[in-house]
Length: 439
Image (cartoon, rainbow, N blue to C red; front, side):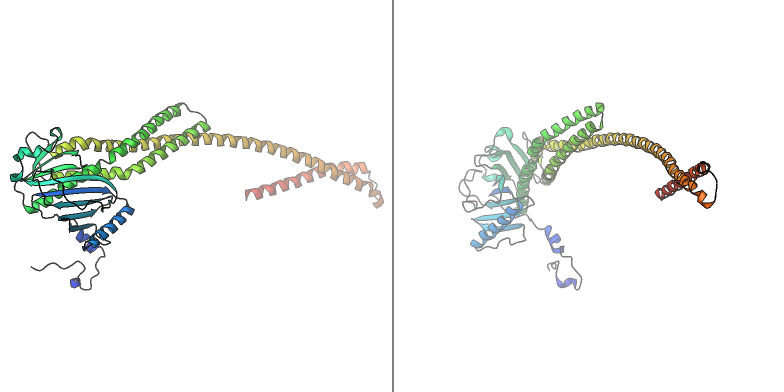
């Protein structure tokens, strides 16, 4: 059988190949199931890993592999498997956490969880971040289980135990989801006829359920931390809404609008800080649901299934996150409506103030017009007086020209024409100024 050509092979001739094609196609096979046989002991750890720590962790694993003459993950791979310490170490890097999973055949006492396991997580191991998940999973054939099926429950606290038949009743899975004295949760898988290919898939899905259900719960403390802030904002909004009904005056409305702006900023800061955590928690919870569906649980008489137990324990936490986000959204809308109402009232107050200011300006303009008219009248009289005076001086000199009219008569006759002429000149000047203002 001929293997398919690589995505970037020359079989495509001169065609231009998308640079991400190989990566996209390879993603389907990025984290394959391993073929395992029972009995098996699996240690699984998940660390929350910031970006800077992720780079340091990759460098550590490369060095760890190089010291043992093994190939490391290099600079690109997010999944790597190596054989160490008599077993297999599986390393996976995700968006916000990194997992180390080690499995090997048990040694010594065949009873589950009894004998310690030699593993690579000793003094030389460097955790990439803060530990979140620590799990030990023991896979035991039913024939080697002391006490038979009923003996599977001896390692757990009976009141907390969840047990289910899975994979068409070829395995029994048991856990109490509690932390033992070694700081790990325990999972027991009783092999009742599992195929070797099904073993690896089942173990990986069970570990994913434990990992994702734990990371999903990280959103609950975040919700509990910001709930008092939401409560405080809601209480203050109710107080401001009551004040709006009786408020009067521009300054009071402006002050309340400032308070609303501060509350909105606090709410948006809390929402922005929690958005990623809440979104990740919902996504992880959905993954848990899909993995539970994949293992095809059937109830074991007298015990709760894993799905039923987790629904009782994690579903309330997820509803808390959804409720808090709904409150944030509703509160944001209410703050927006209150702010819009106050802005409208402030705008109306400003319009009233502007109207009063315009009325005041109009009154002043009318007063200035009257004063200007009065000044113009006085200026006509004053200019006419001086002009008539000049005419009087001229009249006194008419006898030198041979005119024998009395100066007083000439002056008197000049008064009305002078007044009329000065008024026309002033009116013409005022008109020309008015035309310039019109332009």
